[in-house]
Amino acid sequence: MQNSYIINTHSHVNTLKQTPIDQALANAKEKNISIIVPSSSNDDMFEVDEFVKQNDGIYGYVGVYPEFAKDFSDKTLLNMESIIKNNPKIIGIGEVGLDFYWDKSFADIQKEVFIKQIKFANELNLPLNIHCRDAYFDTLEILKKYNKNSNAIMHCFSGSFEFAKECIKLGIYISIGGVVTFKNAVKLKEVAKNIPLEYMLLETDDPYLTPVPYRGKENQPSYVTYVCDEIANLRNTSSEIVANATKTNTLKIFGR
Image 1 (cartoon, rainbow, N blue to C red):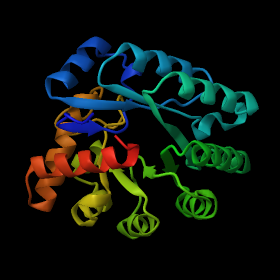
Image 2: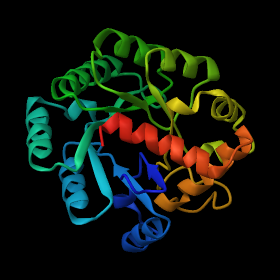
Image 3: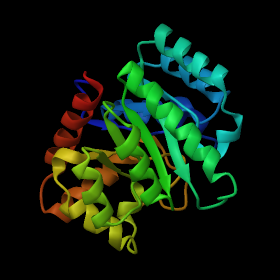
């Protein structure tokens, strides 16, 4: 990651359907972009493990996404531990967190699983990649109470500037994706323009949330350059400054 132009801190490039994965990886390599790929379930953490082993410039997280919290068990943690022990390119726990947008009926289970994964990350001194949707207060309160030593990333940030400031008070990094390029993304543009660069990261969350000018098509890791350019424009600075600052932050988080 050291020699990358940009580090894309959250990309599901292994799940692309419309774009050949090899082509998407080649596009990212051409632009000197390193990629971190999250897992979301008991099953796909093994897929992520194999994927990062097979591809240069690709790193991974292991973790269980809130949608699959009901499938979490003690065996899940054992599998995560085994993968991390045997693959030095697995560098964090994610994506984990809370999502009350679609279904709040098992909110307590989501919270329980989130807490278990925070404690696990703390034990291994690994960063946390956090999914938070319509659960801002709960996410922050859980992190305040349970996260003791893991660097935390609020992935695909969707909250207000006020929430961003509360995250930063706790040392949580704000990762910004393609939504910042949308004309109606007023809240996120305010965040991107005003938070300290020292707490900003870049991502695509592909194949979702494709930035302008490719909105409506499948996203891919190399499109993180459009995120970088938009943030630079909002801040009246250069893309190189944004790229270098966010890369420095990422390397600091992961101790690379």
